[in-house]
Image (cartoon, rainbow, N blue to C red):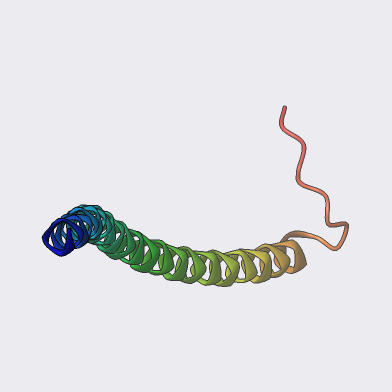
Length: 90
């Protein structure tokens, strides 16, 4: 009788160990997938930050160009006439 109890106990531990080992494999697989996903998102984040910095630089360059054009237009208006209106075409 004691031998039967021992066999049942060993069997239960073996089944429990197999169940835990199976769960561990699934968790490892999911963990690896999540790590790959995090790496992908970090790369995408870095790319987006670089794109944003490029757009900021473009924006600053356009603002500077606009200011220069405004100054040039004001200079032309001062030379061409004080009214500020463009000349009429015939």
